[in-house]
Image (cartoon, rainbow, N blue to C red):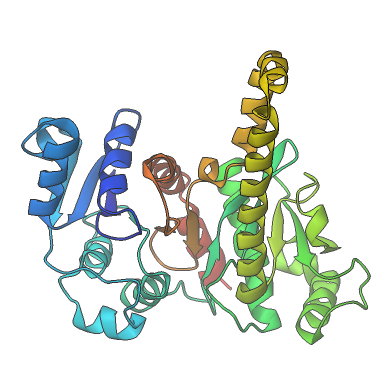
Amino acid sequence: MKILLDAMGGDNAPDAVIKGAVRAAEEIESEIILIGNEEIINSKVKEFYGKDKITDITNKISIKHTNETIEMEDVPTVAIKHKKDSSMVVGFGMLKNDEGDVFISAGNSGALLTGATLLIGRIKGIDRPAIAPMLPAYKSSFMLMDAGANTNCKPINLIQFAQMSTIYLKSTFGIENPRVGLLNIGTEETKGNDLVKETYNLLKEHSSEYGVNFIGNIEGRDCFSGEVDSVITDGFTGNVFLKTTEGLGKLVKRNLTESLKRNIFTTLGSIPCLPAIKRFSKTMDYKEYGGALFLGVKKPVVKAHGSSDDYLFYFTIKQAENFVKSKAVEKLKEEFEKK
């Protein structure tokens, strides 16, 4: 298996990408191909590891040289069309031509979504692909879909998000009958805007036909209860929910740390609790859950967080390998193309 990794995309590229790849290479079975400027990458390798080139560290990582980079401020459609030798466009080309099994990028989100849709293509039967990250919940996790790809949706889009998440959770996590909730401002079926109310009625009446275990509306505060496996919403609401969740997690960790270090007594008193505190901190850290899958396109694509550090790239690479092994994309194709 080959993992294609955009070495130039993201706020901390290529430093964090290289470090994350080197760390992941020690634990995964796959080969990693760093896509980007070879001279820059090897100069960083020299700086970080004292080696002349990446292959001197491990034979599981190689470089595909490119001269261009799609910047965060670039217009997505223009960048994909004109920056043919960018790390992102070359990565998509390699994925399409079966020179790799999954493509990961922390670069320009709009360009990644545009490239995945235009260069890789949608699975037949899927109206709109969506971003689907995993988030922490009580003694478990849940999938949020959509987290930002589609700000304006129709009921058919939300229904397909429910179907895609169900297939993915079954194939990857072995959840036999994933519980799907519709994000809303209340649990009553009369609550919400027209989009949510219409989607609710369709899921309620035709859930068995759609192959979805619909458990009804769910409020934001209950998403973390461990009682839902997939939360469905439009991309605008989902992105706000995602960023709020990340911010709250950071606030809790920061306040907890400062409280424990307030004085000598709180510091000493926290020592016996450190293992529990570390476990709690780990569950609250979005970095532990890797990147967001882009479900609905013909090949596996993973969107890493724009501010990913080496630790998050490490987890995202491991996640991407499992994504391919689960054959989730093939199962999505099978289910949707037969309809």
